[in-house]
Amino acid sequence: MNKQEVQASVGGCFLAIPAIYNDDLSMNLAGMRQHVHFLIEHGLNIENSVVLVNGASGEFPVLTIEERKQTLETVVEAAEGKLAIIAGAQTSSTRDAVEIAQHAQACGVSATQVSPPFYYPPTDDDVFEHFAAIANAAPKLGIVVYNTHWLGYDINAEMIGRLATIDQVAAVKWCSANVVDYLLVFERFAKDLGIIDNQLLSVTNMMMGGIGANLHPAMFWPEWGIKVWTLLEKKKWEEAQREVYRVLIPFYELGQEAARYSGGEGHIDKVAMKMAGLPSSSNRPPTRPLPACFESKVESFFAKVGFPR
Image (cartoon, rainbow, N blue to C red; front, side, top):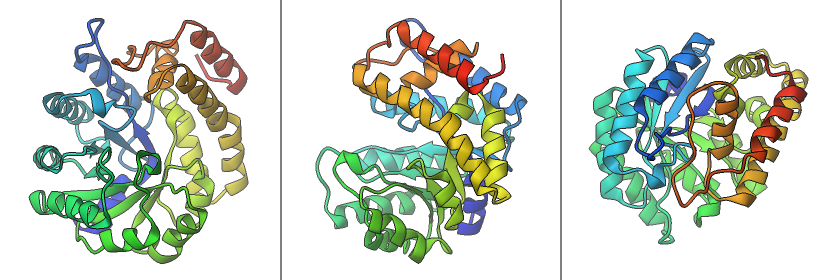
């Protein structure tokens, strides 16, 4: 794929689907397959959405490389070409990232999502060579740059420009701790790179030329995600922002409360999925299962936002 084709496939309602486990915390691939079928049956498709497998909500830090391959293969098979799919390749090991990317290319997915290495604080050259190695190893695979500044390396606008010289880099899942860098990336690169919101600024992102929005509640409420994405496409900014305030922010408030109980990501997503009757599970340690009171909190959230049973 060229950059334009990758951008066309990774825009829309962006969903980082969670890993689902059996009671013994082995992979529940059947449950993940059922979740994908649910998303498709409720209106998500290659025109309005993209699914990320093995992202942060997919608990990539606690999956083996083989499990990451299994989950990707399962989702690709379940989607049957009806959903665009991105494979998460976040890892501090360039060798592992290369292996993941080559597998993703063989699976025929749209792109791979790559972050800078973490734990060992990398230099700019470390980061560039990490991305370049992945690009060289999987030349037919698009790359989405993922910035998670709280992990110790915050990509700035200058570094985005440097990464954009790599042919396969087609998009940025963007957030920044620096508001100037946040805005500079749109000013300098929105015409050449697809920018996907990862900062709860879905409306701002689209107003400035972005291509996608990270809308977690669509994990269990696809119709809501489609509604917001349609408003964004039609440039109905005020209506879209009202939905952000009405649904997205309260859900993130629940996520923050969950994170104060136990670290990790995706645990509040999975409580909501359980309460919506979807396949679900707890997270793997060190993330602890959320107390039962969070089920009541999610029920209250459902009632407040008018989630349809």
